Image 1 (cartoon, helix red, strand yellow):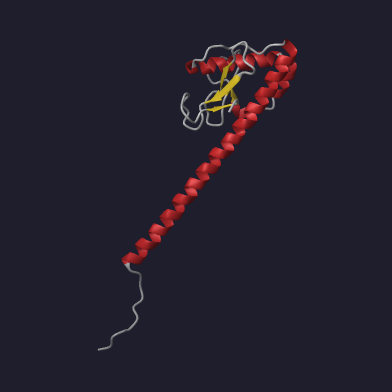
Image 2 (tube, rainbow, N blue to C red):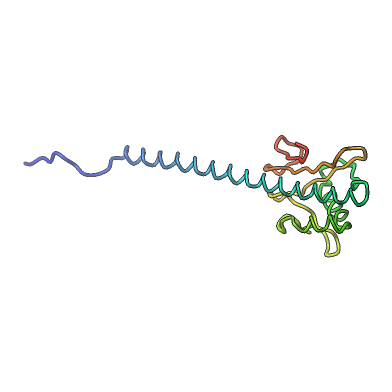
Length: 159
């Protein structure tokens, strides 16, 4: 009877090692892709804040005041955003700058055809607008990636 020295095949341990390595690599790639996605959304939000700040400055240059919105109630962020858009839309210079905001971030989701749209962040949440007379500049606040206002990941134009 002949015995073969070499056996060809794959053991269960070898298969498990390969699966474990592939799982680790997939987890790393997904984590990196998720972080890159969040960073691009944060940059997009910074660009939107910059455009809104420019529009607010043009509004101020034309009226010598910012649109007043003293209420700091995030439950009414939708109304605050509509108010900001409607006020900035009144000034031709501000309106031009508003037109440069990405169309995907300016929506009229909750109003009728004749109401003003709201301004959204890249995560799909409305941007809150707050200005109390006497402040240096208005606050623009995004709920951030967790989509909840008042948490640590909120993003403001004053950060």
